[in-house]
Length: 315
Length: 297
Image (tube, rainbow over all chains, first blue to last red; front, side, top):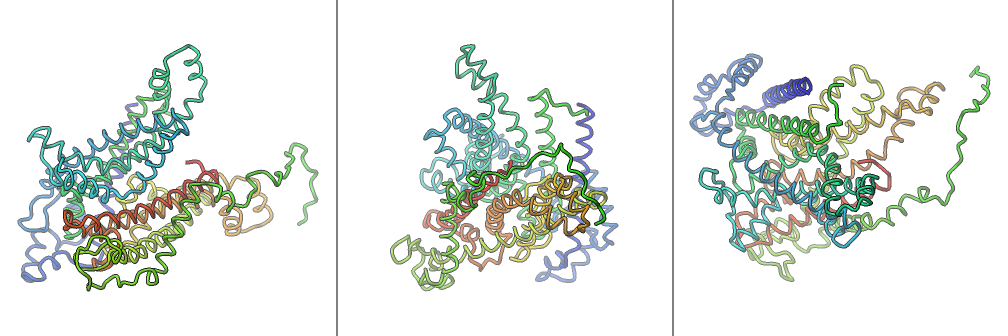
């Protein structure tokens, strides 16, 4: 197990390095000079000075080595804009927001999806199953950004229950933090819970046909206990298998939803960076997004072994 | 062909043709139309496509014309109301469908062709081609398609063409992966070995014997991918990473609506509904195809 984890961590590091390197060179291969664009209407003469300051006057391979060294040492460079704030600071501020949003979205949507999937499977072909199946179809078809807007229209503009935009850190208290995150978490999470519901339903249906469920029934166990203890636990295995992919989807949902709710998380930093062509910010946030996704996948695979002890990674 | 006919090994299984009445031998369209989801999806999709093509006949208005009263709620003259510049929303949504469907179909066609070629080469030849292609595919596989599309827009910049390139590259890995998997199993099939022993060239084998038998999962994937590509384009447009801001696309209309939240709910609600219905119809179709073509998830 330890050797397996070590190997996976090494792979993860390689993937992150490859993404960073690809993005680094691709950004520099496209025509167009961000500094020139930045200063076009201010002072063309100072472009050289800024380039020298940011090291952009060096040949690309030298820039790359600098970038690699700095990144390994945990220095992601400076923004091309304004007072050249360090990318580290921008990202350090952004990460807790994205983590809060993604965690809450995960909790809500996983609970909803699992519950819907179990109900659907237990009441197979009933009215409620049809309704839930249809809702799941809607869920995977609905654009996250639009769902966010609808939630704002209903719960903020209409009912005035929850704030429409912004973020409050947890240090301001649980409710201010939570109230700002509920709507974005729903917007990012509902498509994900639709996916979880569909997988749970089919996994439960398969498990419920197994002989050990019949045995449990003939032993006279309570139906509730059969469903929760015997069926759900085994049905969870395929659910966790696809969770890596689903979590990635949840995360890309969060990237989009942050832009709807004006939460300055990683997603918003990334998108703003792209729109402003602020390359160090783009590189830094892409790298962080990559770290997030790759290590979530790793975590999912490790959780997998804990749920299903039959899996042997050594071979 | 010097070979003399070898005596038939008696161990060969006797192949009996399937009875004609077997359900799997029904014409494809019959199977499709018997499925409620597929029928609903098809009807919806045909309606949307027809409305898109005949947009100028359906709506009396010009999508760019600003001569109507601004921020009118839905009424009989303006079915879905007007926007902040006095443009007819229904007309803009109709014309927006052109971009959405165009991008959805073109991107998937592109990533299908490139991905399938990559998958076939990789699976059929193996060796270093396989190693290089699959390393790249694995790298892309670690990230959701939408994030890949955002990465690529970061590199290429915005605009319709760049969005098409970014989204098609983002969906490439799925096609390459599925195709490679099919080719790996198919290339060991007896009919492929038979074709090879009869002197068929690699190209002939790949195109005539391997590809047609790998089609079912590719068709299903392509259908589902169109819906995700439409969602991706709408989301990119919404984020300001899509087409030019003057083009009426669904994502942009929703994005612009945000300044008029409290005064004009219809501006945000209807274009999003259009995206959802389109994506839903394709998902229905894709799901039914998966069942009919018996493709494992």
